[in-house]
Image (cartoon, rainbow, N blue to C red):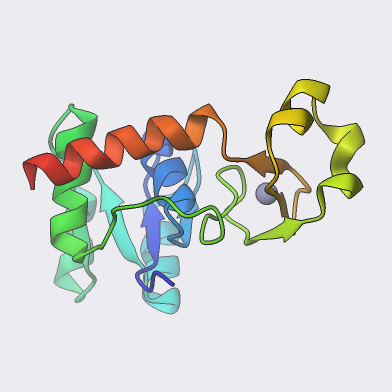
Length: 159
Ligand SMILES: [Zn+2]
């Protein structure tokens, strides 16, 4: 299971979603005060991911681990994160994935119990379903996992 934990600054919601699907505990707040963000990072031993140079400087000054994102390109941005935090990403595993919405752990579930929650067609063609322990959102290895796998392959090709 992935070990590094993150706290992700505003405007980088997509990074948070991807890291969660990859199994990394990633807190994200669309709107968060710098002091609060630094405080959470310190208390919970989280790596900060931010575009904010000033915040990055402040956090580093008190010994926090910060990844200052500079690229606008998502693959490049992610590659910086992967290298900095020494992450191992290759094959997306649904069992490791956290809920992209709320960051909670998801549990493999008997598909019969969630039949009413998903489209009939999805139910027919998939066998594995995960449910978020917190927000009850149901996930399956659909297109978003495929797209993320492609994205991860791109990163690995260039690392
Ligand atoms: Zn959730």
